[in-house]
Image (cartoon, rainbow, N blue to C red; front, side, top):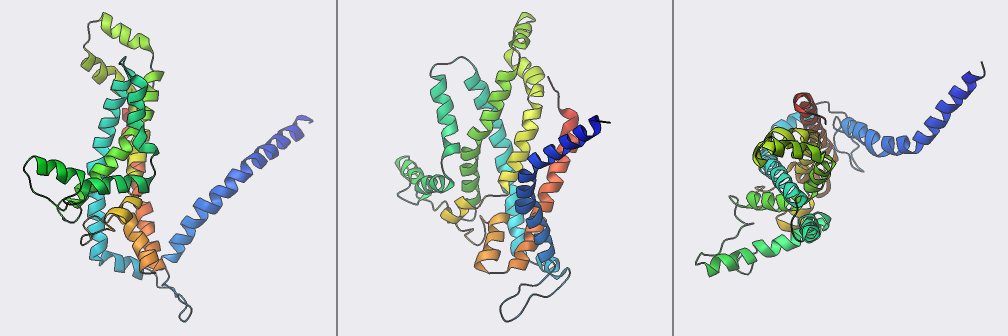
Length: 295
């Protein structure tokens, strides 16, 4: 009988320890999500005209919004262009810096440096690269006999320029996770493969890469989230132009909410963004979990 109060006291202490984190999570994650969902069913109010319940009108407006579909296509191409390349480069860099090489620490620092730079600083660095005539890219192309090009002002090249910037920024960040996973692997696996005469490529394909799948799942989820939350670089480089050719979904939400002051429609777009991320995350767990091999 005396053990019952001790068990209940342990539960009370446990909940008290969890309470600060639970309160912060509810205040800054769960409540904003629920409030955003609720606001998407109302019109945008003002001091003169209060908001009214409009049901699904905001979602119907979204389906007829050509800009929404354009930025959604841009975001899809941006994700396709950044996610596989940044993950592939991260694996290559991690394998390279994990091997014995001169100046190993310096090379790791060089790869990781873009990750710790502020977003605004990164955007200004690449703005210098892309500036017509005086930018580094045009100076090099001019020295090789090619003409100048407005990389950020051309709808055909602006999204590709943003993709290159994002890959440069994220590959080093993902490399850290793969490097940690490689260092956690037992060296006996490679020694056994060498005794069996397996090549380095065969060992990587049949042993290393399957054991990296848990890390790949984690990195893939972060890469997908990052591909849908780009705002800072667009604000500095293009502001979504020209003609929304570089605008992405979160930046469009920012414009609708703070430039057009349409909070209800911005809430509707936010709900759609959260739904897209949720569906992608669920699909990743369902389909990739079967391919994950734990050491």
